[in-house]
Image (cartoon, one colour):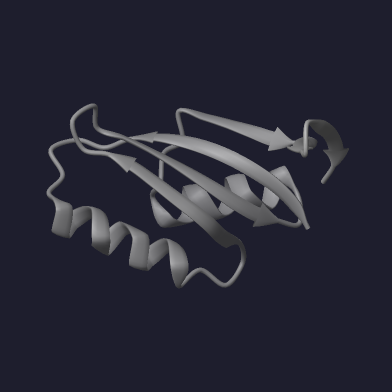
Length: 86
């Protein structure tokens, strides 16, 4: 599975609302939300997803009403100071 980072703008969301969004992300079957990072002050959320491909992730986001400001495929990750393929 490929890994992706997405960023989302959250409008007027409470902590409880953010928790509900996280629950929706965790319940997904077509993609896997590995990490969810939320900044309530700036109204931003970054999610690390696993998905078969970008098209499948984009379709899932659209079908569930999650607008993404951007989507980035993760190709390398630093491990002990060296880049390794993911």
